[in-house]
Length: 314
Image (tube, rainbow, N blue to C red; front, side, top):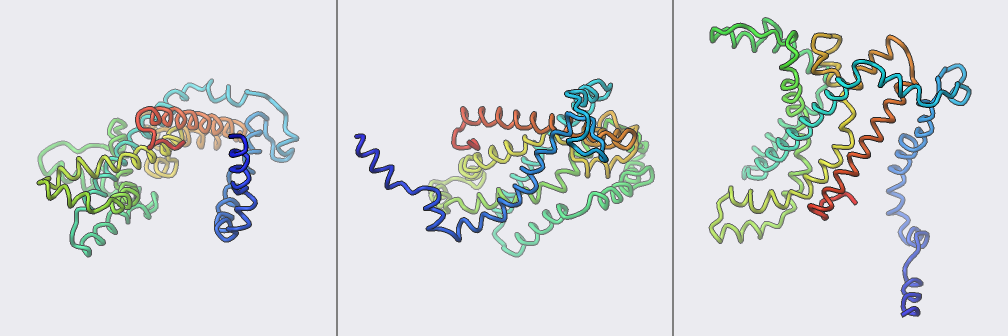
């Protein structure tokens, strides 16, 4: 037995021998490795800023070490619970409804038999992903303003106009609709690719057995999409503590009336940074966001391992 194990160990290729025999394959990985090295791993040394009273003229290592004071400064504010709650609530809505809509769009596209109609429809639903939030915010003003398109329709039916930019309670719904419009089409690409990879003979066998198209979707397509849905959801959860700064700042701006339901950690820190520049506090909150996001990923992955091991990341 020991001799067999030793023989297997000798036959097993080492990392370096594998690289030597497949240099071009490993060469394709070099750009990605350099990208993560330069923009993900080397910047991790900057986390030290979270523990110092950072002064640009003195540099990171020359600044005074203050321990966890930067962390205390954020959690001592009155708004940290509100902005953290808004961040979690909005991101949870974004993840759930965008994933749901992406799956529905992917299934609808897969059911289209006309290739030209399918291509045109796919282009239309993906196009919003490439639009700037600044442009979207300008369009939203024309639609949601006091004399905008929506209020003109409302008044046509004899109802009173809604002051959207003075009504915080409606903005979670508005932001969710905008996120679905902007991201669901692009997100459907992965799900559509998964559906395309399903063996057509499975559908043919189901059709022979008398299954309807709806039954094929519920009994074949959705179960085979389960692993992809869970995996992408776990990856999305990693950023659940990171607010979409570009979207929310473009849509809300400095309208403090809407802050109770739209102010997230990132927009709150941006305003704090303008009023009292403290890169240490910003770095501290960013570190907390990353650590908590990692914890959520590990937790969700553990749940996925118990429920559906083949769907987990590791």
